[in-house]
Amino acid sequence: MAPALAPAVPALTNVTKILEKAGQFTIFIGLMKSTRVSNQLPDQLKDSNNGITILAPSNDAFSTLKSGTLNSLSDEQKVKLVQFHIVPTYISSSQFQTISNPVRTQAGDSGDGNFPLNVTTDGNSVNLTSGLTNTSVSATVFTDGQVAVYQIDKVLQPSQIFDPRPPAPAPAPENTKKKREIDMADSPDDDSTTDKSKAVRFTVEKNVGLLGISVIILLH
Image (cartoon, rainbow, N blue to C red; front, side, top):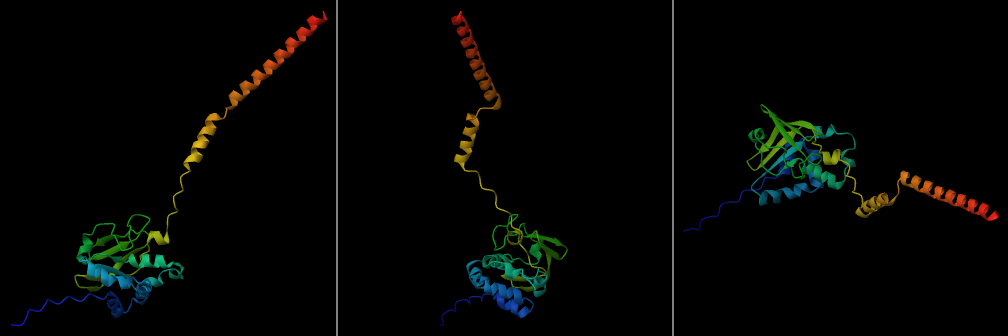
């Protein structure tokens, strides 16, 4: 009797090939490859049962950016920009209706001023906002229960990259603060200084007057 064959391991979905086959995502593919984010996706799919969702901006979406925008970004910012378009869970088209906001992407912190992504729906329309960008899902490119790829009409611009908040001012050093308080406590106020000056002048005048009286008495 022949031994039973082990069940075949399902092949991992190749996101890059899906985008290449679609044809209108060459700029996004180039970013995924140059940042090496595309190299990380197979391991993420292998190590997790959550799947992934790609919000892929088309070439036309990139054309709406100001000229030179991508070239002005650092390598780290480019990585975060690509990761902001990847949700580390599989989202079917129907699940957009009930998804919780803000949606956490691979870019990390979804709080205001960082990498917030919010989803709203209106009938069959799925709208996305990053705080700086409002766009919508225009097409379903691919879905297999593990990977979902959706075309979007604008590049999602996270606040952390395109509108960073200024850093909070550093607190004053503790020693400087204490010294200032001591100096203020030790320094006399104006009224005190005036009173002391009057007292000194009165004492001098009094002593001069007494000296004059003593001289007159001696002469007599």
